Length: 367
Image 1: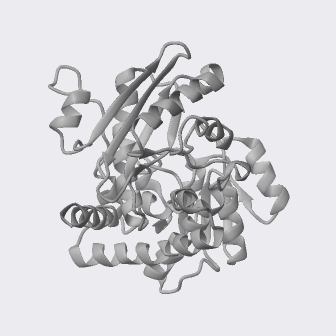
Image 2 (image 1 turned 180 degrees about the horizontal axis):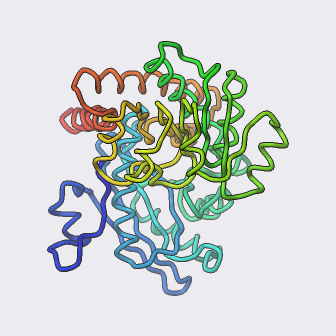
């Protein structure tokens, strides 16, 4: 997937250009939401409903500008269409962003107002948690609409989705090992995990149980301390720069911020496989080719981190953890199929994943 980015100054660009004239456009609907009483300013972007109601989280962030917020919603919603398609879900892609610093402006009144805007779409968009929003927030949003997932178990939801997100990433990593080394295990492999928060620390547990040697880093010292307290055998390095240069590293797992794979990081990366939970790992279009040219196998992030969306989607049918885990386990097969398609077509795995997702959406539109 190509990132949607603001057009350079002085060009015929911007939000409307992206929506109607760029290759990254094609969104079905974009809703600008404002509630003066609560201070709510939000954007809901519905990229596709070809496979079913659009599903995607609500991001709460202090954007530098309203245009940046709209462009982020466009990019993220398009990504959700691809993620949901390859996860085998009967959902299209959507995303919402709320503009503002959640630590300063998030209130119950604002969340209730946002929920009313979600309700106004009549089920075309189903929301969930994302950066800056949490299970408790979704419980509030759900009070004004029935198309809210990611709620607490006490309110009919599945709670924190990090458990299945980590499980799915581990399945993608097993598939990567199968493709790269002929054996679906990380036993004896050195795996570097950048970011050991909610998802990363659970991924570390899967890796250690599988017999991997694990190296970690995180900007939050408390997150590192928690992992070391539970698993003193892990190795800690100062930062991501040190991690990607670790001698003998087999797998690099970005599990923090996006843009981890860039013009600066790819040339010095020692790992032969990249597979992690972070969203939007490719800093810009073309990085996937740089990885391929260096012989580094990249497991597309939106494929392997789909365990969370599989979990929240299941809430709409009465949550069943075992059913979700069975579906998340199929990330192993999907990842292998992407690698096979990439090899057959002579393209990077990211491009192969896009083609498979686009084929499923096109088939649904023509059914």
